[in-house]
Image (tube, rainbow, N blue to C red):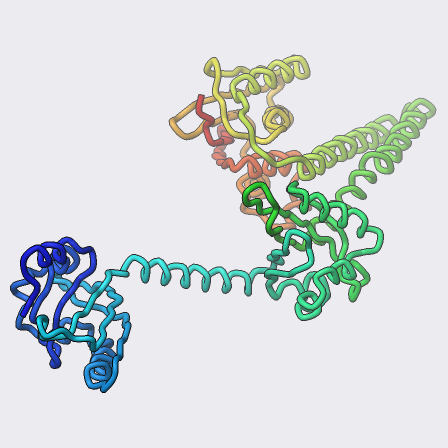
Length: 463
């Protein structure tokens, strides 16, 4: 028998799939939920065997569980998860409940099933995401970590901790505060202050020295965030990155800047002064002292460009909106005053804004001066244009000088190696290259016997 009347209508409106099967698994009743969840007409399912719809990988386990319940001498029930074939051929995951509590009116066993496909898919996706994150955490060189809000419990840390901090993960788990033992004693107060601020809900960014096994020679940068729920800090998470190489480069840049700023400049000033005294005392030596002075002044100019390059490398590399057209006009006016025998004209729109770092004027000025210095004509001519497209702003500097040597062109376009710094004529083109490269721009060089055209292309900034 099957349910009838108002009870039948009630079952048809149930969200769960409800079927009645006999001891062989043949379906004797199915409610309307089977149409909604699986696409079958209930009448078409009646008389078929339920096991025929179950996924081949699941059917043996489900059949075993079914037979165990049906054959039990006392009350028994089972809950199972399995895949059931949809009318379109896809598979739907169900969680079903069956018991051997029968009713003479039903003449079979009631199986109530709920579609849990979305839940199973979400759980699988979470497992896959967790697995990927664990793989990432295991392979990254950064230390990823999470502590309780009061720093008394380590919730997570990846293996990179041991390489960077010089401590062991086991020791850290046993005593979360032990990571302070890996911090340089002079830096501990600052670290403790940052920890207190994080516990109070404030984000922190700090650099300090770690790893007593290496004489605290490792500099790290830590970025940390408090996790707040309902107004309370519940966890603190962050990452630690080894920045020793950057710190070393910064120190080297500082030393070079000091050398260029004081030592070299002072020594060359002495050379120029002594050369002038020789010229005054021995007029016949003027041709030789002129060479000394010209060379010393060129070295001073290179030193200034070297300092400018160091400042650019050490400066904030964030891009911002720059009016390229206005910058070009300012550079042309400056060159006109500095080189009255040269002709520099510009063709620019009223405005052309691009994303650049600070220092675009230095790059354009360098290209203009370079075009004038390397032109044998007594009255050099240089033409500058600024053009816009939907995506880019381009500055083109065109001259009538001799072709740029390939080693110089390689410096500008980035097709260089460290030996090029010794073979190129100076640091000016390196300054241009680094300014454009750090602005995420591109440089193109077109040289012929009739002259050169250098193009600087930048990402256009929307109005």
